[in-house]
Amino acid sequence: MRAVDDALLLTLAGLEEVVVEINGESPRTLSRRTDGPFTVVDDSGDGVTYWRTAAAHGPLTPELLTDRPVEERLRPHWSVTWAVPVDSDGSPARPRTSPVVHAPTPATSRSASPPCSSPRSRWTPPAGTPPPAR
Image (tube, rainbow, N blue to C red; front, side):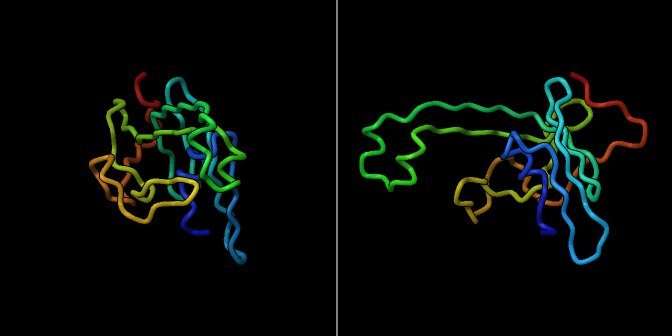
């Protein structure tokens, strides 16, 4: 449960908040909101991160699913979400999430994108800093 990070809220767009409670420790809350073009994840343990996100979805044709397992045939559509953390001027920043592709079956190999792959590096604005420029 300690590994829960922004990726959960970015992947599940309908999820607005997650509270993690571990054996009597103070609860850790991660929440998601939209601020103009940014998706903002506020993590009570790791701070606030602004993300630029893009999403797309569409149908799969029946012939693509012909030889697929029943679970895949019951979901005849695709969707993708791309998220890049940004700094105070809206430029790409190092992600604090794990640098892997998150999919229905997570990949375990590191992703080459974004080019900076430090999973715990992040930009933290000084107190009172306004949100990134739009």
